[in-house]
Image: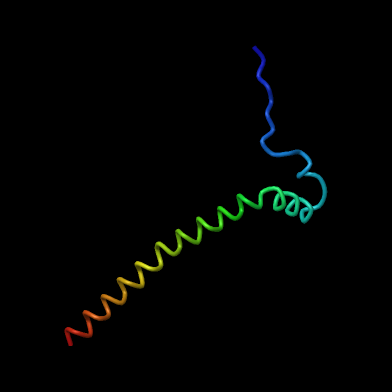
Length: 66
């Protein structure tokens, strides 16, 4: 039994200059880049918003104790 070689990335994207490569993969993976950006922003917001809430609560309790 022979093993077939499978290319996951198209070979055309690796030809040319670095800017050409970035433009090629950016054009063909725009949806994936959008999903990645959205997931990173959701992750950051899910960390930042609770941190601000906890900081505000800690500040209010410190002010009330005085």
